[in-house]
Image (tube, rainbow, N blue to C red):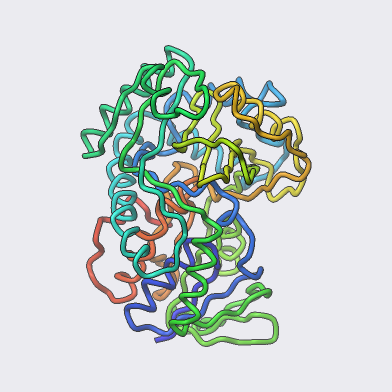
Length: 412
């Protein structure tokens, strides 16, 4: 069998890895050359702690407040767009306590499956800076602190290990620089990687395993017969297919339309900045909860990032929102000497965001050999290994390691 994977981001490459290990022929198609995209410039967290889906009670009210500020962590570009309106309607319907309660266990299962697989990847790939010391959730306000402590209690129900810290205890974990917070929660099961190194090493491994790549050209059409997709058209090249996996991130709806199907997804643009050769650095990665900013230190290198900007695939950088990431960082770490960045040159990428914050993983009934894998939002790296294993099991027609019903690509 020849299995075609459309999309060469972390989800597509992870799928290729596990499917090739299962003995199938694999071809990865990507419109770019696998040296950029959201899988490269993200923060690189592998976070079982993120078991609460993005669509949560109160997030719409908070989002409306943020919309009034030019430097807030959230922004929707006003526009008349049917796909955005449909997505927003389903997001509103999903942002309730009962939906979150139903979905959180399934997301937790996927996250914990992925986390358990990282040590296997560590043994099989060249070094990608897997750092297993945990991730801090840091907060400044008492209201946020109460919420984070409640989440820590939920996390322990799922078997995660947490350490609740006051201001001084957080400071004890960071002896090299001042930390200006009210407190924090350290999630010991979380870890982080250098995403660019992970992608580069996974790509090299796949080539050595015999995976074929068709790069720099997008899919233009599909050949179908008898309820199956028989071939993929890429430029002048037609590639025969026994199975198709669509895993091209925020561009998934375009491929779905070519197939006569619909996937509700919006690109959630995020920004990041990297700093190298720092004299002093953080010991622990952290999410600065009140400001929705994330940090990822590796030796003397540091990446900070954040924002959720729903503006389509706009290539416009909004300097005030990028600058707010830097300013938020300085509020929490006032003594860490970071050079003032050129915010107009910040990296940005498009996170694929589903209306309920849950990924799409599974077969589609339109064709017998069509599967989707995407919509992981900010958790692509966190969920990649588990998603790849699940797709491998699906290709082998085996029972999946965890239930994937909640991830159905036809749930909307």
